[in-house]
Length: 329
Image (cartoon, rainbow, N blue to C red; front, side):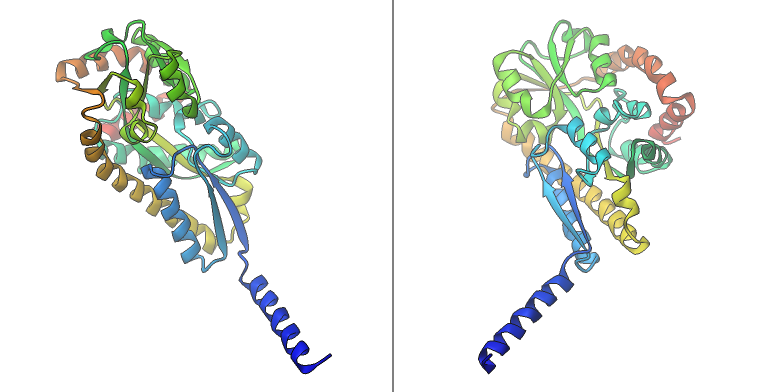
């Protein structure tokens, strides 16, 4: 072997060894259904960057956005099985696996962002995240996409009576389905990625979502009216597969936890920034109705049977604790 050949061989071997040494110890897949321009999809990137930086490359995150791995229910199931490591499913979908998650979809539970933070970031949110271990998930933080609003093609919604007979698309979430039945609508569960076509083809006539989702999925193109009901916070639970979480040493668990909080706060900041712009951008595309105080009061009164229906599943103690926290008492 010539000196030149030996030098090249040694250099190649050294490069391979260096690459192996630099390889991540943990490679995790983070799946969600959101398009990449939405606040939570951008926050997922913030989370990835924080984890990879603060773990000194020991953890590598591969994000699979826009329902590449399926809808929310499929992603929950894959995370339980360990086919996906990290997810941010809506708590409405998680309620199909954990009944106490019904809590967050009760209409008009949280009036505004401060009430939302008291409930999600306080004792109630922490308690509910802990229950997910029974579902082979480790709950880390409560993310969210802002408050949901109603759109439809039939008539302006000024109070619950205006929903009578309207075919509303919802999450596959018992609380939300029951809510619209109580208001007199005809709710249909449908995967998020199918909603635009469903509205366009008249399979459903209305839907509810935060402004970021309404804008990113262009629902305003196939809807005539939007009422700013802000009736429920669109809560996501940031979770990991339990075995993936347990595989981490304590120092890297801390890195992941702190990055999840950073991502959560980034999503909230992005949401606030985007919502004012979105309303301005779509003002000429869809009639936007502000819900009056009288309309809000009528919705709250009409919602009381929903609280009574789900109280036994959520538990008296947890529901009462959430109501107190939401009011700031």
